[in-house]
Image 1: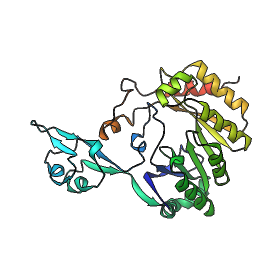
Image 2: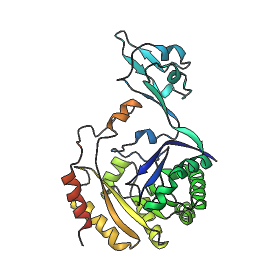
Image 3: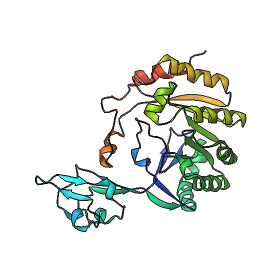
Length: 294
């Protein structure tokens, strides 16, 4: 089966136990304001433009059949992303590598073969493969085949998810999953809707389901200064850990600006531009509050 991925990263240390390969699937139904992988939001292959590389030669405009590229009188390169069909002609024509297609179609079996290149490292470190995104469950059948193939090869499997998948489908994935990295993003319901796009109910439902199935979980908590770095949120995380013994630990994911520049490259606005990276001191303090006994 084929699906759309945008990256395969080797030697990952933060996406589950041991040394891992993380496979990033394209597509997400949420719109978290702090998302550091905006290229994962669309399920389709998409165009990226790197202005700092562009030499304003006009080769892209000459070959594009859809009028995606234009230039102002002063030479400014404008990109009409909504008109792009990702044919790739402009990418091939660019002499400066200022254009790229993000994402590619891949066969599940080929993805797992790539993952297996580092099998020795997994065995030595207790690692394996992690499926992330985007939201990997957006490509449910593709994800399920990837998990099945990985288990057939004896790999430790992990999935990072926002927890919005319906219960029946989530339950069907569990025989092929050793660990679930489950996001808990916000406690305030109104802010959850404002900054993420939906309410908390599906996420809380998934926490309950995984507890019923005794599925090992690591709760992942992105902490955004000024939005959810408050005692109400930290107390809710501690309460979830206390309520569900299958949660092995809660891991703070501190806000950073690594993905900030990606937004403009694919024609999207970034709403948290004024925020700065969280410091190591902030991360440690947040983790301590999450780990504190109730």
